[in-house]
Image 1 (cartoon, one colour):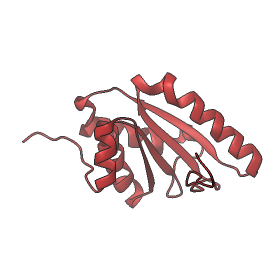
Image 2 (tube, one colour; image 1 turned 120 degrees about the horizontal axis):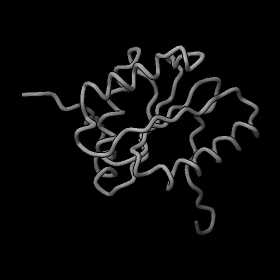
Image 3 (cartoon, rainbow, N blue to C red; image 1 turned 120 degrees about the vertical axis):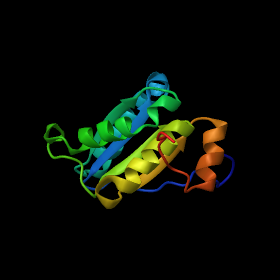
Image 4 (cartoon, rainbow, N blue to C red; image 1 turned 90 degrees about the vertical axis):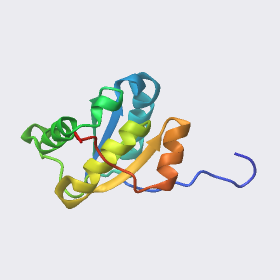
Length: 140
């Protein structure tokens, strides 16, 4: 960035879980870099935070009640040790399907948790900028 312009940074690291949900097409492009930056931030800040990732198959068929249930079951699982709670931050990394699905999960999981959208397509950027449009597909 030129001159004194710097990217806006929002601290989300405290003692909590950070969950990144993404579609399987994006793993190699984004997740390893994000994980490395996360590990570096945790090391420098000394906070007790953990990064969890969950893969969702790409495509409109993933915006379903069954996918929502499987994400929530995974977050509630004792295997998380401890399970995700209300201090969890969910990051939706991907296109419009991920933003819609994960936004809905974040709004309904334990009455709502913090949510960050990281859109990776132009359409998802437009959807994210308007906000409030999160949902899953259900039969008519």
